[in-house]
Length: 75
Image (cartoon, rainbow, N blue to C red; front, side, top):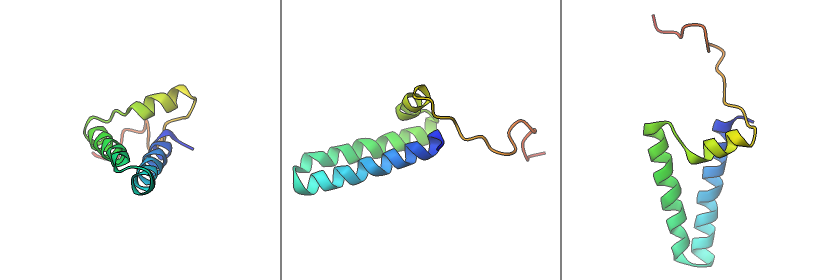
């Protein structure tokens, strides 16, 4: 599994966990969903994510497209 897929899965899991805990434990857990969504927005613009750095250190590999290193498709 690639880092990109792991980050999307982790973000989805954290939002679901936050919603469940917010419903059954305390509404303060909804702040976790807010944090995750703000982190996703930040990463969309800056292309950096703390989770990606952590997963890279754990040995997961980045997604490599079939066109990588071939000069791209724009010409």
